Length: 90
Image (cartoon, rainbow, N blue to C red; front, side, top):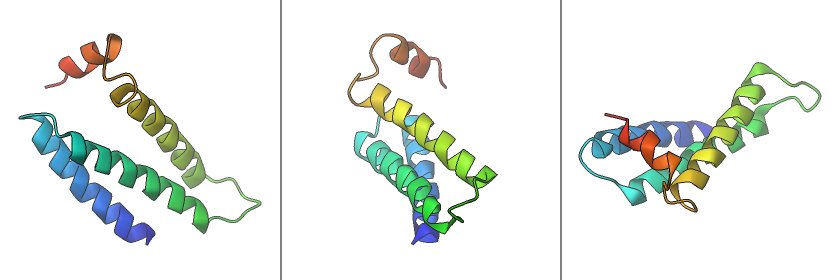
């Protein structure tokens, strides 16, 4: 399941990046963010409970960045400073 989500996330990321060069793809972007979060969450199923490793640290960091991206994109609608950041991208 985790590997399938990883492959799905990569495909969705490619679609979103290519689409963002032309227009905003709201549905694809949402699907990419959800599948990326699901990949990070399912990664926690494969750890030793008493061991905190680099993989888990990256998963926590990924989820933190995803939470910020989802907050900026949906509840805040890329307003204010978030809009300036996205307009500076190619």
